[in-house]
Image 1 (cartoon, rainbow, N blue to C red):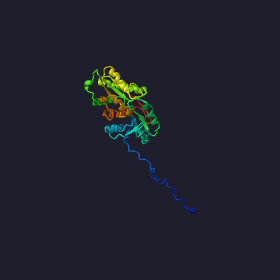
Image 2: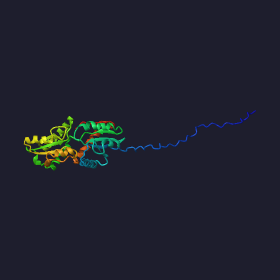
Image 3: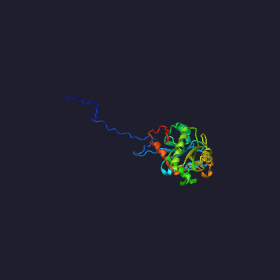
Image 4: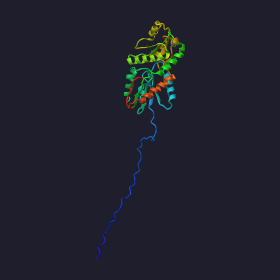
Length: 287
C-alpha cells in the first residue's frame, strides 16, 4: 500500500539565501564635499593691525604698505584692521573671519598696552577665529634699514657718519609700559651702530624726554646738526609734532618702505613657525 500524497505539498527549501540588493545611498542634501586628497590647506590670513589716526594720510599709507606685502607674497590673504579711529576696526575684521585661521601682525613698534592687552582681548572676544598674535614690528634690523633710508631722503649724508657735530633723535610715540621704552632704546642703539653717531630716543607723549628737550641736550653737547628719525608706521599727529621740532632735517615715517613690508611677512612667518597650536592666542616675546 502506498501513502497518499499530502493535500498541500511543500516547496523545497532553497539551499542558499536570496541575493541582497544593495540600497542606493545618497549624500546628505547639503553635506560639504571634502577636498580632494592632497589639496593644500590655505595659509592663515595675515591681519595687519594698525593703530588708527585722524590724519587721512595714515590709512592711505597703511594700505600702500599692505599692497607691498601682497606683491611680495602673491595669493596670501592680507586684511587690514585698526585698534581705533579708522575702519575696519579689529573686531569687525575678525568677525569676517569666522572659522578661519589668522595671524595678527601688529603694525606697532614695541611692546606696549595695545600689544599686551588690546590685541589679546580682541582675539579672546572672537573665539570663532583661530588666532596667533605675532611680535610687533620693532625692534628689528629691517626697521633700521628703513629709518636709514628715510634719513637719507631728509639730507643725511655718508659724511655725517662720525661727525662730532651730528646726532639723531629717534622720535617715538611713547608709552608708560617699561617694555615699550626698552624696545625703543634698543632700536636707538641699532640705528646708532648703523649711523656712527649718537641716537637719542625721545617721545611725543607719556615718556621723557620730549623731542625738543632731546635736541636741546644734544646742542649742549655740541651736536648742533641733529636729525629727527620718525619712528612711526604712518603719518599722524604725533609724527607731525615731532617733525616740527626740526622741520628741515626731519625724516618721514616708515610708511610703505620695502623693508617694512618684508618685516611684516617676517613677523607673520615667525608666528606660524612657533610651537603653538592654531586655536590658542599666543603673544610672542619681542626679538
